[in-house]
Image (cartoon, rainbow, N blue to C red):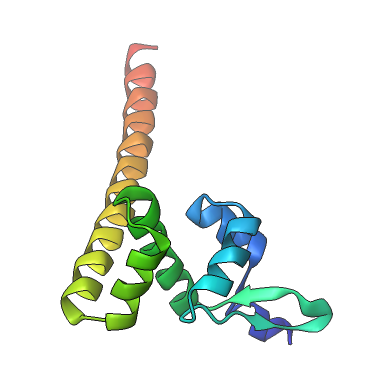
Length: 120
């Protein structure tokens, strides 16, 4: 069971990752049939990577692109390859940009330390 849990994220972890409340995630679960968290002991929700990817797409549609819930449902129900590719690429690009920013900050810190050693 512990090994299985590593494959899943709790609703709290997903809430932080996507930057929405747990209430919003529960609401989206009811509205979007594509989200199917697994429940283990105590009716606690655990999400797979596929669920999280769909939640990120829903977040993108509702919060960033301004779709209504009905509009987002229609798009997700169509499941067009172009939509999936576009949104997946957009999410991956944002994750890549975040990763690059973090690495650039780390490099700057290291360079500042090296400069400090040379001057000191």
